[in-house]
Amino acid sequence: MSTITVLGQPAVSTRQVPGFIRGCWNALQERRKRAKIRAALYGLSGRDLQDIGIAHGEIEYVASNPDIDPRGI
Image (cartoon, rainbow, N blue to C red; front, side, top):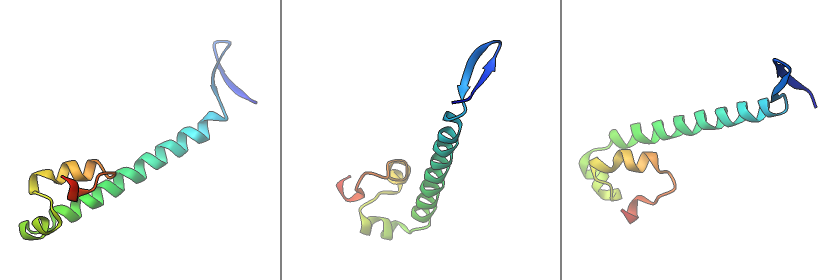
C-alpha cells in the first residue's frame, strides 16, 4: 500500500482516493437526478400535481427526499 506523506507523516492512502472520487461522482449523479425530478414537478400544472397528490409547496420536499412516497404526504 502506498501513501502520500506530508512532513514525514502519512496523509492519505492512495487506495482511499478512488473511493473518494467514486463517492463524489455518486453524489453528483444523485444531485442531477433530484434536479430533474424538481424540474419535472415544477413543469406540472396545479391540477396535475393534485392528481399525483403533491401540493406546489411540497415539491422541494419531495425532490429532496427521493425515498418517500408522495402519496403518503
